[in-house]
Length: 261
Image (cartoon, rainbow, N blue to C red; front, side):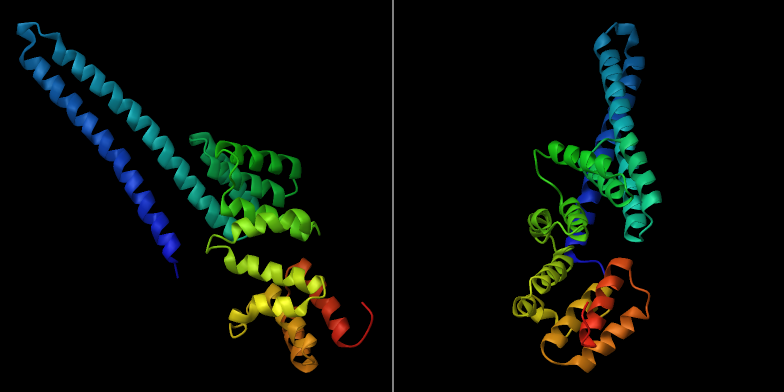
């Protein structure tokens, strides 16, 4: 179900699109009116109407061209996000590149950078992310901060990951994901009490994801509930989780069984 944040973004987008095409319509109407008037009074040799028609026509063409380019960029970027959220990174990258060809903007550039980062083109990915931040005077979007921070986290670079994830957590779209990652970091630092504090508001939430299962099972193990922890780990290992979380769940299962990792 869409969040309030998403509704606000949609309303803002609709207003911006309406404003663009209202301006286009306004100048198109002005060009037509000036043109018709110029035809009616041409015998009076008053060039003002012809000039007005030309100026209004040029502005209408200018606004129309850039409005269409901008709208196409937004459309390709939207479908790029749909592909990205479905873990189809190559199609998402292609869509973001097409969006940038229509209209270069920081959001599409940052999204392209995230795709490059996660498809192995690390240097190009960081270059795009840095360029996107430069376009916003050094500020990254929550999306960029989260996926760059997640990249560092997956590569055991907590020092660089934490500031980016903290910045991303200000957005409701990424707060839950950041909370789970911070809980994992606390567990890695042998601080189950701190991980419990972070997860306390979500302990009654249904466990549906591998990272969440790893955290909850680790907390149950720390609380001495080995049977419950074992059942949760076995359940999610049988669901073929992503390789990163599979490795962690397998190590946790060994710990539960009392063996050395």
